[in-house]
Amino acid sequence: CNCAHAALLTAEQNARSQAEVAFLAQSGAHLDGFAQRPEVSISAADNRVRPIDVQRLLDEARKKELPGDRLAIHHIRNSFKLDGRAMADPIGQQGEKLELGFWTVTGGESNLSNAIHLVNGYNGLEVKDIIVSAVASANVVTPEMEKKIGALALDIGSGATDYALYRDGHIIRTGVIPVGGDHLTNDLSLGLRINHKHSEKVKLSFGQATVDAQARSEKVWMVGDKSVGDRYIPRLAICQILEARVEELFSIVKKHLEGLLTPEDVAAGVILTGGTSRLPHIERVAERVLGLPARRATEPSWLTESLRGPEYSTAIGLLLFAMNAPEREHAKNAPRKGDGLMGHLTRWLGA
Image 1 (cartoon, rainbow, N blue to C red):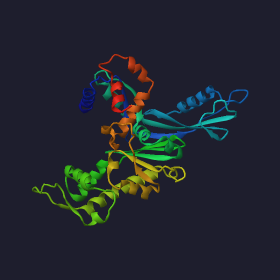
Image 2: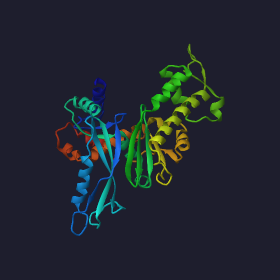
Image 3: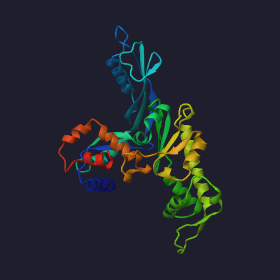
Image 4: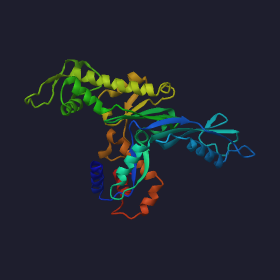
């Protein structure tokens, strides 16, 4: 609690403004999702689709009963189908049966409640909405055209990997894999018998996700200052340990999305973001395991230089979500200090 409030205070001080509302990103094993495709019969005598028919579909999706300890976070809309024909906007079209696909993301009630309580406890701040981290980061790093032809966005963070799978311009799956950069560091610590601090340094300085000719013959210093306890470490061992864990990560992703990662349906391939995507050659392992072209994400050109890093993808996506939310208009008229936090966000993002 103290750490979170200290971070919020630091953010306000750096922005020279008081936060008005909070939009909260969520990741972790408590998140889950399921697909549904409600359908309704067209009610008009001429069989033309009206807005009320679409609203009935939305209501049907929200009606699904969840276990008592689960809360819905997102009902992500996919494509409409009218008598089996896919279309972006069915209003005014003639047909008998209208369907709409949804990917519904749920979270553990206690996890969400604790997170909201933590933020709400800071200086009168109020959580206005929650967005899944996978959705936030994927929206930033995946171009619109690639969303349409199919893409898999993987945000590999320190403690977990969030994924979002696009098809026909819509997210059809999200998920969280409990493997991230910290697991790579821990593997090095155990495999090389060095402490966590040194293994993190070794990973960042000498690590890569594949073994090449240079790695096979090179030895590196554990600390680098030749102090007592410093010693040579075979770079081959470093790379072998990292490669094994990275292969495992992508194998788990493949299993989660079994049958959905065909080259035809994911024509844009895999987009890697998150701090751990900086690991050299990690995209090669992704290609080998997933059987799809893979690349590191390119940050949007409109971002300021200080924010052009894969580790910021979720935060940037969350800020964009907040700035485009209906509450934004309310925030402009609310009492605040200085120009208001949203005004500062606009300048930070280069908008």
